[in-house]
Structure formats: structure tokens, C-alpha cells
Amino acid sequence: MADIGVPDGATVSIVVRPIPSLRAHAGFSHNLISLGERAGLTWAPLPWWASPTLSLEYGHYADGNANPLARAATGDAMFSSAVLDRVGYDYASAHLGIELGRQWFTFYVHAGVSRITTTIHNLSAETMSESAGTTSITFSKDPSVQLTTVSARLGFIVYLAK
Image (cartoon, rainbow, N blue to C red; front, side, top):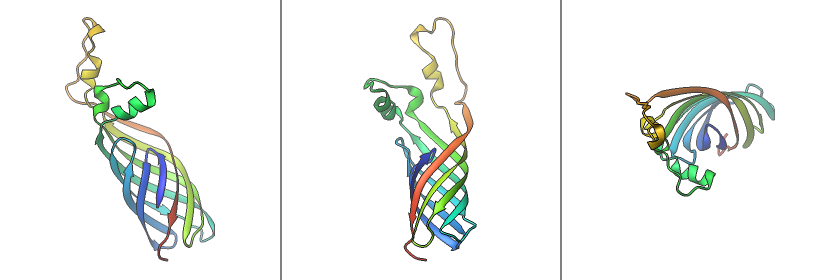
């Protein structure tokens, strides 16, 4: 299986169908910052060529340096942020979707919600600037952030065996 999505990034997975309507997958991902992994289940209740789907996934991205991605996105070769030195996150997604194909090839579109959990590292270093004057902000610990947002994925599966 191969797909691309948000917050999933690009993922390549191995798929197992224990029964025709249930699919389990696990694989490796990349989000232009670091490597990650994702595992999940998809239920396609109809045995037809087209079927609605319900998918549940969990993924994790290890901390990586997002500064090169920020430099590429902004076009500023000198951009650097201490907060972007270590960016990683966990996510859990629930998607409804449609898939086309069943026997040897399946194309799918999924959309739904994701819960993203991350820790913002080096925030104290980023908030301290020379122009801050006498105001000072410090954090005794890196803050954790949770975000629930829309998510989507587009992909395909090639079955090597029935």
C-alpha cells in the first residue's frame, strides 16, 4: 500500500486481509522532516467494486530538524528557529472514505479527523530575544500540545495474493 496525506505524510505499508472486509496495515512514513511509522485497520463492509470504508490508525514521527523544510518553504536560506530543531508527533486518525477495486488493486480516498500530540522543544530559547526588553518568559518544562484537526489521505493498494 502507498499513500500520501495529512498528518500521515507519505507512507508505504504491508497489508493483510484476515477476512475480505477487514484490512490491517503497518508501514513506514516520511513527512519531509523525519521517519515515522503507522499502523491501522480498515473496514470495507460491501463486497462490491466500490465500497465505503471506516479506518482507524495510529502513527508516530520521531523528532527531526524542520529548519531545512522551513528554509525551503520561505526561500530564506538563513532561517533558523530553535523550536524547529526537534519536531516530532504522535497522531491517531479516524477516517470515512471510499475505495474502488477489490481483487488485485484498490484506489482509495479517506477523510476525517486526527488527534495530534506533540511537545514543543526549546520554546524558552525562542521567546528570549535581544529586543524583549525587561520582560522574560521561561518554561520549566517543554510544553505538550494536543490538536484535533481535519485530515485526509489518498492512496492505492496492490494485492500480491488473494
